[in-house]
Length: 428
Image (tube, rainbow, N blue to C red; front, side):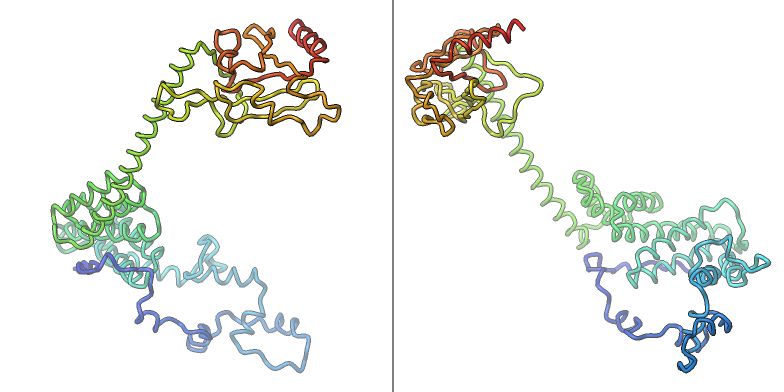
């Protein structure tokens, strides 16, 4: 009966597993390593002498090394077809056989997979997964663990019968638990955080005290920003092993993230409450002044300009400021005033706006213009230039639409035409 080989229990989960250990680095092929030449001097593919001669344009050229000649004597399509017959490079199993549909290497590998009991075959795959983990080959390791689990849960029993079925069954459960928890590590390293939590949950069904499952699950949930679940997973693990350094470190990170999110949530709640109070005070102030407001479905983009209370948005004693647009309808021009106090008159602003750069006829002066506003019913009222804006807006005859006050500024000589045009537009 085969033996279950776990990853070491003292395996340091806090290590940076993406750094290649020195021992492995030394064993890796160095630059200039010729894999074909090292393989017993065997050529990778049979040489097609006729095709090779046809490609040689210089009869005096030196003879190619066998490995290079073997590659250059075939087309890329031929090379891909021959590589597909090799298990290492196989991508299309239907076309992996020879003329008779046979592939000796593939048959041999498949036979090996069915050699031994179900537990022995599953253990082989799991051991290969462990070896891949030690080499940081996470994708390969994940595949081996998946195969181990597939063998255990396969409905068709095509393996040798065990001598002791009960012992075999217990061994299968241990292998399945180990494969799930080790595959969870692979998924964690690969960024497959949800899959990691599912593998941890599967491992815990076999062993509710699996510390690695709680640890890896807490890390994956932390990465998913599911802080409450991550905290619960770490807490459950620490309840079993209070001295686990890995779980303590995970719990610390989770607690820091939780505190950060709680502070952010508190700030957001406080800001929302502040805005709510500001809006309530502003709404009350507008009603008290009998200023009508209305919003449309497509308001203009005023950026950060809006009706506001100053200097303190939370004080009912503050004054109201309005965004105001001065329209010059006879010239199709306009000016925008971001903050127009209710205590200011229109002429207070006209004094610094005039003279207008486009007014070549000098028609627009403080004394030479009149101001108008539209009423709620679509008519016009004359807005006194010397009156405070509050006096013009209060009373309910005009309304502030989309938080913007609109004032028409017209030269006295053109007011008759302007009024006529506005009446025509209303009746039209």
